[in-house]
Length: 312
Image: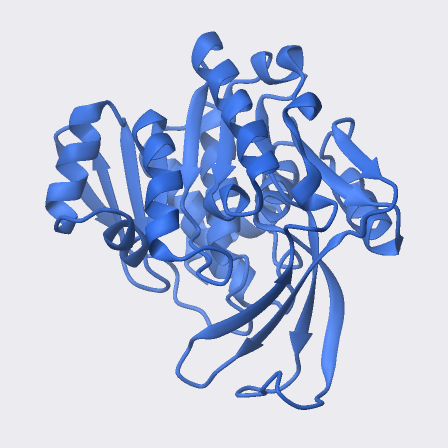
């Protein structure tokens, strides 16, 4: 049984070719690319240590087959991926703007991804793992998905798994008020939080320091704050330290945070400490942004070792 498991969506992503390309008129697009934040995360885990699986739902179509085969080829346990007839695999369209922002259009809730249900959560499968990773975008998908994730989290708590959570906010799916209500429960149940700095501020009303203290006091063991190419900030119990990630030329930022998470959790599952895990996560995130396509940048161990050893 896998040591690292995630529950969430599998999608394909279609990308606008040009910066500042609007979806309000015809334009050139590239894709489909295998995607979905939990799928990118678990693919990155698989490329590093392989002992991992995903609980998800795909449509009975070529997009679903493409994702299934990609994950299987990279070593992800795909036994818990459900193919749903009469539903299509979820899709995301993305365009990038010159100010660094992105715009997404999702077919998510009413796709196969949104149909994942508590019946798809196998107690024995979850309980056999060591880590359960949850993405906030998955919680934003549908009520059915949220209930399925809640069941998985409850099993993880009962069986002593480490629960990691990345808020991964997607305002196109839920507004901030809805997100706060839905995310607040898992924020305080997680052992590890892997978040963007701005995301944590959006989710919690206080200052960064106040929010960190509140989470640590509630029992969160490790909080890692990511911010693109800026220093990674790490809080563990009463300690704080930072790590400067490798500086690279960005091609496509989508999936970088998911690859960071995957390399980070894979390192912990292999027995490395937090500092080594952060270094590996930062290297994976840097490698990811240099390739076009959300899952295309998932790194292999030799690539990560090169960035940790030489910084290039």
